[in-house]
Image 1 (cartoon, rainbow, N blue to C red):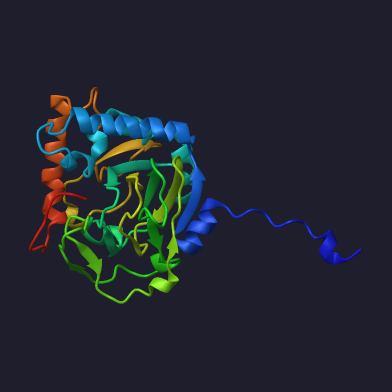
Image 2 (cartoon, helix red, strand yellow; image 1 turned 180 degrees about the vertical axis):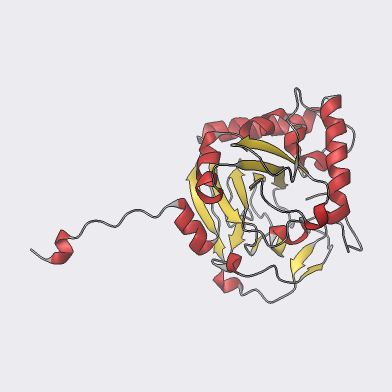
Length: 288
C-alpha cells in the first residue's frame, strides 16, 4: 500500500479561497432555469408596461433598480446569494446598486475592459463584490463577460473615456493600459447561475451574435465600513448583519413598482451619485 493511496483527499476549495486567488468565483447555481425564466418574464413585462415611469426605463434598470423594482428589491437579500458573498466580505452586507444589463440579440453592443470601482468614489477597497446573475444564457456567442485571473491584485489602473456607438458603460470607459486578451477566460453561465467578481477585476464583454437577448442582473455588495472619498453623500440597502459606521444612508425597496415615493428616492440617489460618477468626464450619461 503506497502513501499516495493512503493520503486523505484534498479539501474542496472554498469560495473565499478561489476569490482571493483569482478575483472571481463561478459558476454557482442559485435558482432553477425555470425560476430564472420567470424573473426574465417579469423584467420583460416591466419593459412592456413601464416604458417611461418618469424617465426612460433604462435610467432605472441600469441605475439602482432595487429602489424602484420590487422583484429586484426582493432578490438582493436571498440567502443563496448572500451566503457565498458573506464568505468573502463577512457577516455585514449592504447593496450599493443593482442593475439589469440587457444586450440585444444580434447586437454590436459591448463593454470595454474596465475595473468597476474606478469611478465609484470608494477608493481602492477590497470590500466590493459584484454578483452577476444570468437570466438568459451567457455564452461566448451572446457576449458573456471575460475575466483576467488575478488582475484584482493590481491597483486601479488609468482609464480613458471612449464614448463610442455600442459602448454600454456610462462614460464608455476603458482601461488605458494594454490588456492581453489571451489571458482572459469566458464567464459562461446558464440561466439561474451566478458569478462573483472583485471590484478591481479586469473584465469586459463582447457583442451578442446570438439570436436571444443576453440578460443579467448585477448586484454590487459592499461592507458597511467602505470609506467614501471626501465623505460624499451616498446610499445603500442593508441586507445582512448591521451597520455601525454610518458611511451610507439606508434606503429600503419599493412597496410597488415605480410608486411615487420610490421614484422620488431614486431621483435623490442618482442626483447624489452623479456628482462623483461624472467627475472629470467630458461626456456622461447616467446609464451604468
